[in-house]
Image 1 (cartoon, helix red, strand yellow):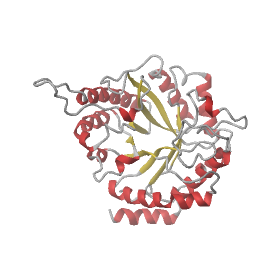
Image 2 (tube, helix red, strand yellow):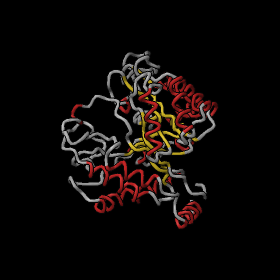
Image 3 (cartoon, helix red, strand yellow):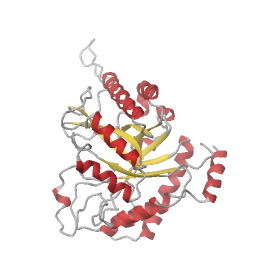
Image 4 (cartoon, one colour):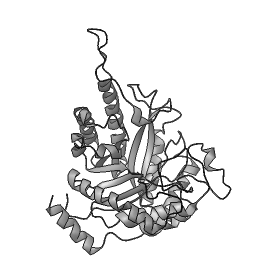
Length: 354
């Protein structure tokens, strides 16, 4: 690990499932200005890459769900004009509405003697084409970070490391910036970290860690509840010898949202304090950790129809923070300077032991 302190990304996840045309629209471009005004200095910009079902082997751009290259280039330029760095993050989505982590195929499917169908290799070849395409886009637009995949739980396992190697190589051939992948936490819990992770520059993780056992927990209690996670990730950072970034992290503004922060299906009463306390506790817990590279809060905008988020007239119970107390919390942290001098010393000490 470098002896230099890991820069802290003060980011937002933007445009998840945004339809074609949104990024170049007045409404989409206006979000850049709003983020800049609120201290956001980095954004994870998402583009949906589709496949028909969780067992399809071909990825493709869709005229409805996939933003055009033109509009991605336009909004990336706008972000850069406002001093906001960009992590381009193409995300595989299944048109049958299956979660991308469920993409899977039989490993040994020879039921009829002498007949064998290959699934994984064609899927990875298609993924490589997609990664190479968006890598070129990231390079020509000057994206500072490029995330080659997200939450592909079955595909990211160690058994597929040799299939990932040409995917990473293809990205390296066309892109010269910082290369990462947004991992599921359980993959990082394996006794053997996937070998292909070591080909990356940084490890992102979708980290929706519980900070409460009941609604209405204070910031101090949340910080105490997060301590085991801090210690665990500290050891993990030593193990992977790379910066760890929360590629996704957040909590809904709903009563009890900090209990299971990734839960999107439940309805409940609007509780802006719960979300604000979670944001404060997360930043307070991880900010001074020298291996922590910051976060992309999930999420800036809501592109899905979630009627159960709008039941309480007091406010929307989704993850967005604009106009909520969590906005002020994140802005205050995002406007902080880099780590204190003692953290820089700690970084060098930790690196020296690796």
